[in-house]
Amino acid sequence: PFVIVCNHQASLDLMGMVEVIPERCVPIAKRELLYLGTVGWACWLSGIIFIDRHRRDAAIEVISRTASTMRQENVR
Image 1 (cartoon, rainbow, N blue to C red):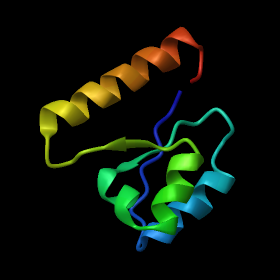
Image 2: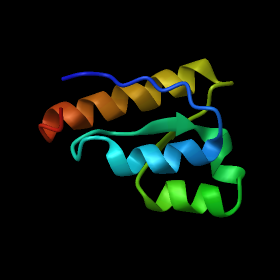
Image 3: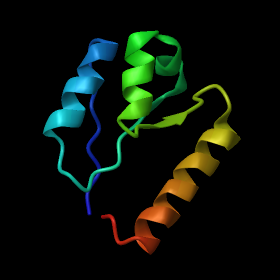
Image 4: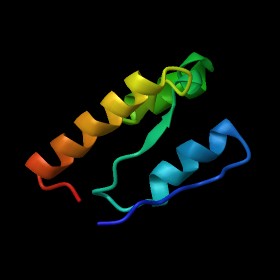
């Protein structure tokens, strides 16, 4: 298992990264991307998991649930 951390320069970079990351990788992005019109729809439709960076407890909960699901479904 590994974690890829990307410091991208634009929101559109994330959609390109989804195409090149390993198949069993689970992309996580900031929730603000959901509100960027077409970009938000494309991210949502591609299965990206969104976290709210302004609500620490909620972000930790989403990441914890994602990790549990990954372990249960052997997606590592």
